[in-house]
Length: 61
Image (cartoon, rainbow, N blue to C red; front, side, top):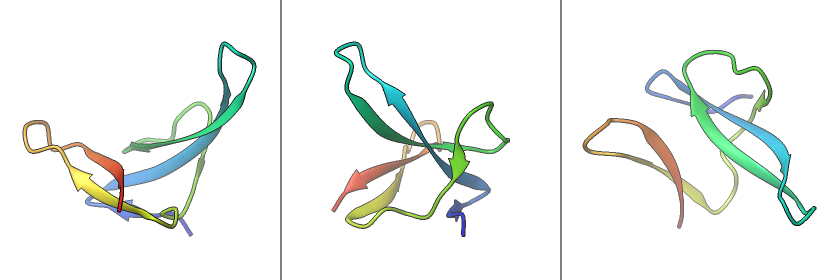
């Protein structure tokens, strides 16, 4: 089940960093991105909202 916060859906995808290491990233989007899949809120994280822009972000608890 996808996590939705005020109309923003949480997505995840795996990216390869310059050093060759794979890392999973999380991001919010209102539309379907080109790559990535909807996901649940990861354990140990909470959602914050930027006061100036209103964009949600993940922060560690």
